[in-house]
Image (tube, rainbow over all chains, first blue to last red; front, side, top):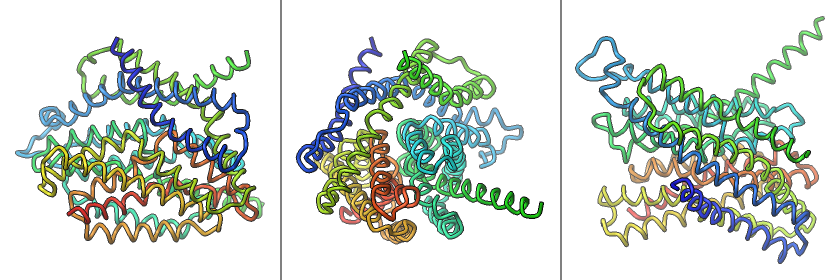
Amino acid sequence: MDILLGLLNIGFATLTDVLPIAGIIIGFQLFVLRQKVPHLKKVLIGFIYVLIGLTLFLVGLEEALFPLGNLMAQQLTDPAFIRSTVDVVGATLQWDDYKWIYLFAAAIGFSTTVAEPSLIAVAIKAQQVSGGTITVWGLRTAVAIGVAIGIALGTFRIVTGTPLHYYIITGYVVVVIQTAFAPRSIIALAYDSGGVTTSTVTVPLVAALGLGLASTIPGRSPLIDGFGLIAFASLFPIMSVMGYAQIGEWRTRREQKKQQTD
Amino acid sequence: MIQLRAFISTLLSSLRDLTPIILVVAFFQIVVIRQPIPDYSDLIVGTLFVIFGLAFFIRGLEQALFPLGESVAYAFARKGNLAWLLIFAFALGFGTTIAEPALTAVSAEAAKIAAADGHIAPDKKVMADYALGLRLTVALSVGFAIVVGVFRILRGWPIQYLIISGYIGVVIMTAFAPPEIIGIAYDSGGVTTSTVTVPLVTALGVGLASSIKGRNPMTDGFGLIAFASLTPMIFVMGYGMVMD
């Protein structure tokens, strides 16, 4: 019964999300471009697939993954649990007592990014357009590694309470330097990867982790320190995707050199 | 028959996409947390929903969102009317963002913070107005972003100069914005790009770049989403400064 209600609720929310988009596109097709939508029937069926798909996806997440994720975030950030994992307990918990949290942050960042539907979409396009030099799995793995590092560092920031903008600004500097050296064709895609990682799956889970941490560590405010993890998750994939392209380029160059010397 | 077989293969790849999450959850439950999971049946039903949902979405993506985005791009490139293309770009950015549920949630949260810190009166109506103002700000910023991004594709400007100028803008604004808006502003860049918008906008950009002579779909076609995640940060910090 709960699931049925969830289906109706989320189905309706997805509809209100999709309808304005469909309205804008079809409105422009009919009144500005004055052309029929090509393969209208196929496109409409596709839109219905998108609706069904997103609804099932979101209901499933809310039924299964989010409650469990929230519970795990609570359990892992519980000071009593953290004390139980440390051999020598000091008077206060130190930043290096939170090892399991960093590992959980990285693992959950990686695995939710791999399942992120909008990243799959961009990766499919990138493979088509690049003629296969960038593969769907290569791009997804590169982005997921970036998110994993980003979220782990983000939890470290919450634990230590250092200001968010130091990290973000340093990150920008690294991105700018990498941009100067990365292959030109990857740059736009790398910048895009920052935005696509953080949509349906990653954001709620990561937010739960941030809020859980910020509310159990003395001196942190969940309202102020709980935010900011998503910013990490959108910054680090830019670096990892440029890195992915740089490694790829370096390997091709090395092989060419080898062939020349042979 | 072919349809069914294609669907089953999509279903299998969705299962593969979900496997890492299942492994991570299982590892932490069994090895680290070691406490019973409350609802096994909900968990299994929910996971099946996610797998089927992802499979349907990917089918719909290839059948509706990609072709539609491309066909609009080709039609605009053929028609060659710049003004309408930019109006379309703005409408797409603004329209998809204002309806975004994640943004609604974040704005409400931000209004709570502003009220708790005493920047606005802790009154329901004032908070609702603040949240609505924030949503409009973000939607405007995304509309603006897609316009700039599309214009850049048409001109073939290298993306890095624009994005890096944007970063400098973010850094400068960070110095002047009220501290409690900064976290929200940085996060707002991430929430604007929804699962329906991303494929459409990507197909639009790549479609435009492939139908205009002298543009490379790889170098020029991507990047619209990057703009859409950057401008909200600047606009939201601006909003925080104006409201302060």
